[in-house]
Structure formats: structure tokens, C-alpha cells
Image 1 (cartoon, helix red, strand yellow):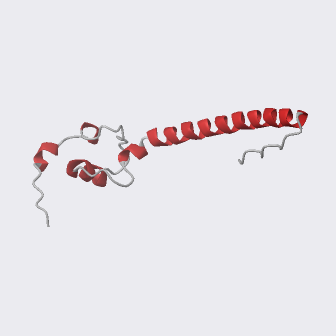
Image 2 (cartoon, rainbow, N blue to C red; image 1 turned 90 degrees about the vertical axis):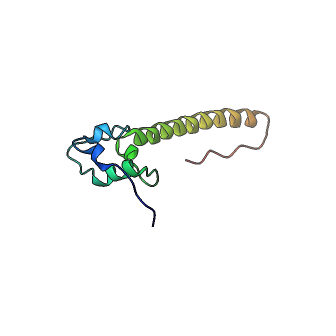
Image 3 (cartoon, rainbow, N blue to C red; image 1 turned 180 degrees about the vertical axis):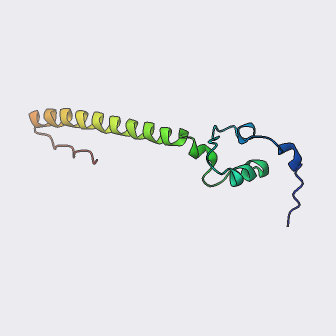
Length: 97
């Protein structure tokens, strides 16, 4: 087993907002595991950053970009297909949603 030599007294009377730089400081939540993760330097699994809404916002932005690209492809595909019909070329398949 690995020795754990941490000066735990440096954290006495310290609020979680003085330990966590990820803006997860909700006072109504229990921060026991959150505190231990920061003190021991854990950086795996679902972290406090995921609790702040930043990750959720990134997911929503990515989804919006994907929808925008799908619409652009759909529009381009329709234009290409209209041109193809004029020249009797095979039609492109519609993009999958």
C-alpha cells in the first residue's frame, strides 16, 4: 500500500471554493468525495467539472454544430440533386439524421 503523507491541517476551516478551481461550489451538496479527490489529485471518471454545467454546455454546442452541418449538407445535397436531374446524373442519397 502507498503511503499517503498529506498535511490535512492546511485544509481545516477551508471552504471547497478554496480547493476546487472548477467552479463546483454548491453549498447544499456534500463535498466529501469531491474534497478527497482534489487533495489526492484524482483526475479520472466523472469529475467536479462535469457538475458545473461547462461540460453540458460543450455538449449542447457540439450538438448545435452537428445540426447546422446536417442542414447545410441537406441544402447542398438538394441543390446537387436538382443539378443532377438537369444533366440526367445519378442522385446523391439524402443525409441521415
